[in-house]
Length: 266
Image (cartoon, rainbow, N blue to C red; front, side, top):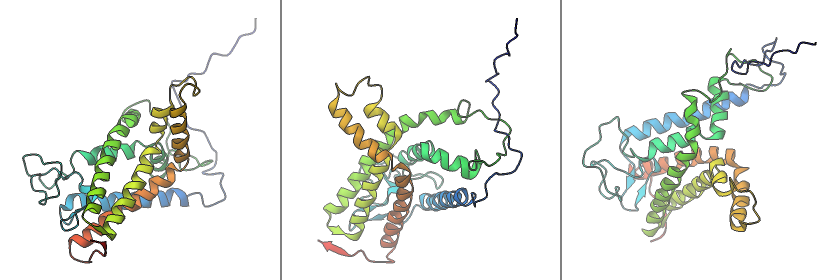
């Protein structure tokens, strides 16, 4: 009898073995480098602003930066806490938007696109196609802490609720008259909705687990719309990082008196 080889042990996963550091001849490192710089710049700016606890509210026009929405500290500026506050003053190391920010960060951190971006840019897993990886072993997202990436679908539901809060903020600003700041808040929230609804989890919620779209024409129509947005998910992921910074910076400048807000309709 001919002996058969034993099945491979799939419990031990190894990286692809390349004899050379890379088989690429182009500047493959530019993409991961720019991604790392872009993400680091956003995280750095957002961290400073979240813990600054100042210049986040313009009472005359009802401008509230997304980084502080909803404002929950008892020390929030008068009028900024439209949904009420908790009965204590937050210390400096707690963000005023204590409820929303952690979930928004987790929603982005576990996003399918952002996983690809920071895996390559920071963890170098992999840094690029046909480039040797520095890690000997590979467990994927089957073990802690990366096992928590599977919670992305649940963070999506919270992100939808927070997007509704941001929508209220933009609508409240426009209800106090139309100014450049109100239009910036509106544009930001529209793009945030595009990013949120283009999420893979949203696509699964609408069209997943259906045996046939024939019996669900409305869900099929919604699924096609979300699928069209999904094809631009990476684009919205980067655009919204920029609009969040732009919106926050504009509110900061108006709130601090550095610039005046041009009014279009009073």
